[in-house]
Amino acid sequence: MKFAPTSLAGQLTLLLLIALAIAQGVAVTLFARERIEAARHAHRDNAVLRTETVMRLLDGTPPGLHDSVIAAASSEIVRFSLTDDSVVGETSVGERPAGMARDFAAILGREPERIRIAPLRTSFSNEYSPAGDQEHVGDEEHDRGDVHGHRESDWFTASVALSGGQWLNVRVVPPPDAPPWGWTFVLTFLFSALVIAAVAVLAARRIVRPMRNLAEATSRFGLGEAVEDLPEEGPVETRETVRAFNLMRGRLDRYVRDRTAMLAAVSHDLRTPITSLRLHAELVEDPETKTKIYTALDEMQRMIEDTLAFIREDMQREETRKVDLNALIDSVAGDLAELGHGIEVTESDRVLIFCRPVALRRALRNLMENAAIYGTRATVRINSDDAAIHIVVEDEGPGIPEEDQERVFEPFVRLEASRNRDTGGSGLGLAIARSIVRGHGGGVLLGNRANGGLRATISLPAAERP
Image 1 (cartoon, rainbow, N blue to C red):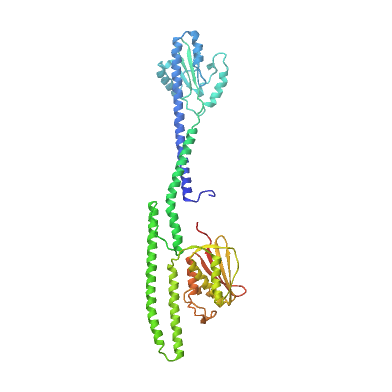
Image 2 (tube, rainbow, N blue to C red; image 1 turned 60 degrees about the horizontal axis):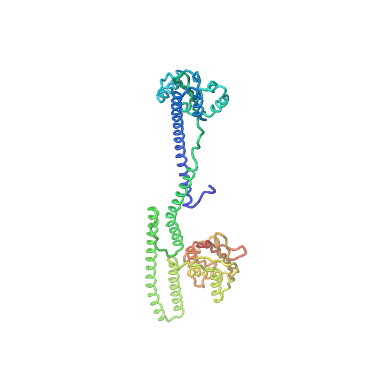
């Protein structure tokens, strides 16, 4: 749905409000039926009691006052009249009217044969209206529509024989329909909705807070940052998820520390025989042989240091902070310019990123130095969009064959056909650079330029932390 909420709190609140509306609708429907049923019974019982009262008054008052009693007792929904003949025919036809007559007789205390009764929809007769009163004929037609859909036992016309020989006719019509719900329902629904929405929001926040912390910690941990154990809070499922993350983080930290400690020990052990070989090389009399030995030992030393540097990138614990990327690139370019390398940095708008500046500086230096050495001259520019920040390093060298552009990122891989073997590189520069950039959530892509040279593009996430 286009306008459906996406957050857990919004979705939970919406679902609870929908459930509340359905439950309230069912409850109100049942309540309205009970309310209408109760009103129907009360109206019928009231008509019977009024009929009994009118009978007693007519039996105890002179005939000259009967019209006044009838007029005073009649209303819009219970109408009385006094006639010499019954307006209702014999009620022996049909089981239901006969049963109604017996019930009516029991309430009024009269013999059943002295009472005639018929459901309203079958009892219309002009004889009902008192002499000279023709307006009731129109009312009959109006009432014919009012009683549609009601039970016949509730709305009826009855004639009761009086002791003086006359008949008391009573006609009971449906009362005006009352609305099945009113402001009470509306206010109750609104109050319930507010309470449920508040509870849903509070409950969702209680659930979402540890999950949001877990997502942030996972993102930071994936970028190589140091992350402390998260507090285990919230529902059981959330606590179990956080506990699993804490255990995983602890195991990975121990694994990296153990591996680094092992490599540090190996490095220390290798330095001793290398130093010993240097001492023995001093005893070699042939200058050419001595130079070759020193060259080999220097290369071994560099390989050891580069290897350790490459491995340490996996356990980098440098603090992440906001850095001016333009200033960082200018600083690296300045250092390389002092060493005699040609580096040109294209001016761009100021770009701020969250990174580990020392590590990122090393990755930039490796790529920019390679471009300056192997491509004669390097150009650096920054392109950015909503999704990522792109640092483009271009050179004017021979480039790299497409089939080797991914392989050069592997440790100790050197393309001797296109790169100078006398530079002293160990083949770890690009591997270290990509490891650092991936540790920042980005990537490095190589590609040949159309007019010659190599293009290296570093892509970093553009989203800033709050």
